[in-house]
Image (spheres, rainbow, N blue to C red):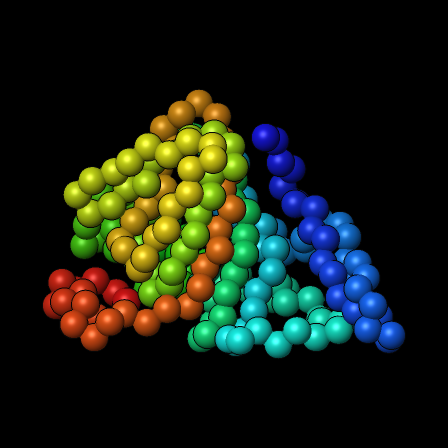
Length: 195
């Protein structure tokens, strides 16, 4: 599977008579790229800001504005990421800039874990679908190789994505806002990890 930097997005809605129609058909407008990670891009497809989601006949574009790695409270994010093969390690300053540019300045856990420069923990439930290529899911003490067609249910864990192949890996992510169970939240705070 090969994808361009902007993914075609088809959004449905309703006309004045309540009939189903296509409202938008074209590239999803929000594209995030990184000067420190050549070849990396992230295309936000849709965002929601509450649960249950209010279904409007003709919604406004929800993806514009500054880059936000995480969904808002009770929200969700659907995005497609292209992760190129790793070509060297990022400096600690690069890491700090990357997480700040993603709208999650406190998100990096690299200083705590040291496992991978892009290690981070998000208080979200994430569904990740590998669309093409292969990638390692790196956790605190283990990792697993994933290939096209594999699906990860990432449940608020400390993790990173590491592409050690010679080709890009394309993933679809669905992030849902979450809340840590109280005893787990206390344990994670005790380890000095950001929420």
